[in-house]
Amino acid sequence: MGQISVTKLPIEGLYVIEPAVHGDERGYFMETYNQKDMAEAGLNQVFVQDNQSMSVKGVLRGLHYQKEHPQCKLVRVIKGEVFDVAVDLRKESATYGQWYGVRLTAENKKQFLISEGFAHGFLVLSDTAEFCYKVTDFWHQGDEGGLRWNDPDIGIEWPEVTGETLSDGTPLNINDRDRNYPGLKDAFKFG
Image (cartoon, rainbow, N blue to C red; front, top):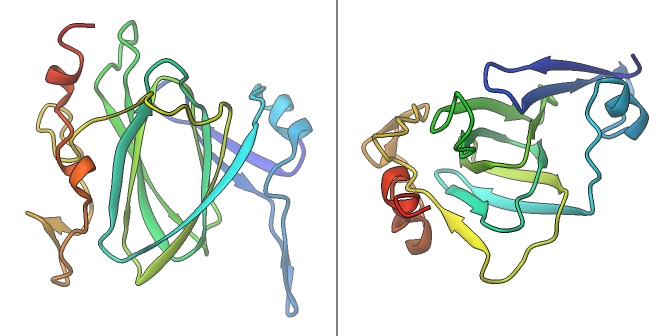
C-alpha cells in the first residue's frame, strides 16, 4: 500500500486513516487524500465536495445525517482538537444505534472515514478548531435530519463533559436545532 495506514473499526463502515507524514526541521509534508491509496485499501468512495468549518471551544455540532441522500464523509482537523462521533443508523446492521468516537487533532493528523448510513457530530476540545471534510453527495435542502447529542439510548461518552459543561467550566455551545433533535427511538419510530 502507498502512503496511508487504514484501521478498520469495530463498527462496519468506520475507519481511521493515518497518512504518512514526512517531516524534518523545516516542517512536514503529507498527502491528505490519494484516490489510488484509498482504492488499494478497498475504499472506493467518490468525493464530490470539500467543506471546512471553524468552531470555538465547547461547540457541539450534530448529530447530523441526510435522509434520502446519505453522505460518506472523510473528516480531519487542521487546527485544534475535536472529539468526532459516528452513530450507526443502518437498521439492518448488527450495530444499529451504536456509536464510535475518535479524537482528531492537528498534531495526530488522523482522518475518520464515516460511510453512508451514519449520523455524525463533533465536540471542540481546544480553544478553536478548524475541521475539514470531504463528502460523497451534495447537501440537499430539506433532507437533513438529526439525533439528540445526549440521547441515553445511544449513550455517547463525550470526553471532558459533565452535564452541559466541559471539565474546565466551558459551557457546551449547541444551537437550538441540534438541541431539539429527537432521540433515536423517536426519530425512527415510523420508518
